[in-house]
Length: 303
Image (cartoon, rainbow, N blue to C red; front, top):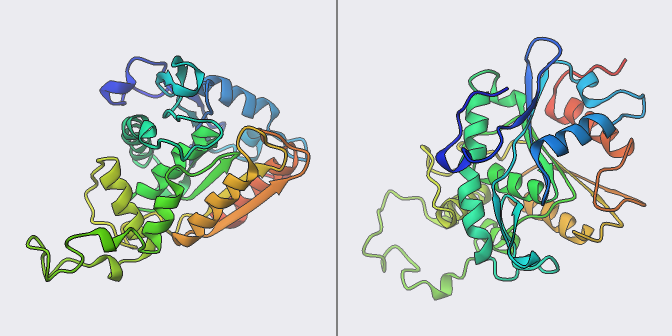
């Protein structure tokens, strides 16, 4: 199992559930569970039921991969009469996740550095291009925020049945449409704190504006100033969603994929017929393995 390496806010819950590689450690996947689940529950389910059409499991096609399934902190759930539930962050409404988005901020702010810390620890063991992050449902949503705030790329991202928190604000930041008309310092000549050497938002690439917006929103600092070179923009992204998902409508998954494209990411979007709020076996597992092989560039054992 992993050594104790998490921040103070993470020490009151179980350590990550870890599936060790069966050969030399070459790759790492960090996958986040959904609402009310745990790292172990989600990890065991994925390992046992995530079967390819050739009958192989993920651990079989990626024998050199370590799979890490962290568990979120228990938080008051506004949509469940404030019951204590494992969740990466809270939402005010399950029907409209853009409602009272301020409710989401505390959990996002607390969880973000914990996931980044896991990534940094694994990057000491394998190259960053050999690391994939992602998740299921709310875990996918949390992982997308992590991806957007990174200051260097990873090997890939895989998300299932998720959505993108603060999507409209992220879209606006990417398009540089953050309400500059309401800004009293809308130009450098009006801003007494402006630095002539600073890059203006108009000059920044979409991902730089998005990263800056999210890091400010979540009070998260990195060593590098946001720009295309100091971002995760070259990380390939896979997003899959069931067409019959009644918990997170596929419309929200599709919107997330479109916004990620607007931010500059190369996104593979897949929707699946006759699938609710889960992953489709074997179709989606086959697509994940194909994505990992073709887009991420990892070696997989198909035979």
